[in-house]
Amino acid sequence: MQSKGLPQIITKEFKSSENEVLTYILSKPKMFKDFTNTDKQKLGVYLVAISTYLGIKETLEDTHRKLLVNTLCDEMPNFTYEELNKAIQMSAMGKFINLDNNHYQHLSPMYLSAMVNAYKTYRANIYQKYQRIQGRIRREKEPEKISDKDMFYIGLDLVDNEFNDYVENTDEYCDSEYRNTQFKHIYDYLTKHKVIGVKKTDDIDELKTYIVSWFKAIHKKETEPRTYICKRFNIPTTK
Image 1 (cartoon, rainbow, N blue to C red):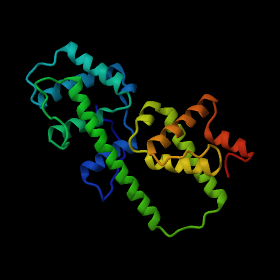
Image 2: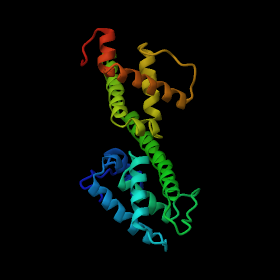
Image 3: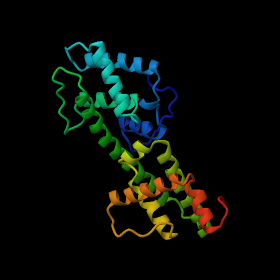
Image 4: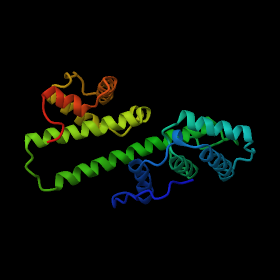
């Protein structure tokens, strides 16, 4: 079931388990929403095996198994098998302090959801740590002189890439716990160039909602930020 050929993300400042989660974040394995019937059958087999692994004595009947598979694919469309497996393993080993680790002899949707939510919090912390490290590395490099024109197009690249992520996986994007840095940079860029108005708040959740609503408006116009912004300033889309 596990995706083959995922490029291993190795960062010496992370533990091996953290590197594994970072790999899932940056490499984006196949999501539940893209599962074929064959994938779903294999996921069902996995749930039977994991039920035994967790020490659940109640037999996972076919109807219950199929309902669990459909629930995972419908309610967690942007989650992945790899991360589900990691969430369950970490939960079973007591890695999540605030999680009730008792399954009460039943592999229920609520039990699976609790493990996944605990994992998502853990994943968000890893990504934030990764962003801090990347920021430090960039600051430690000898500063280069960048022209205003280059800075404009560097910012435009960021806005465009984030917009593409939003369009590709809107639910996951809006749910994301690890894009705070990007939202702040995008807000600063768009307000600096007067593409959007200044919002009198420093609350990151409000800024996130503001940026996402702008993405939504741009998408409704059947265009993308690069075309929209460059047309507004009557400049080429590339430097």
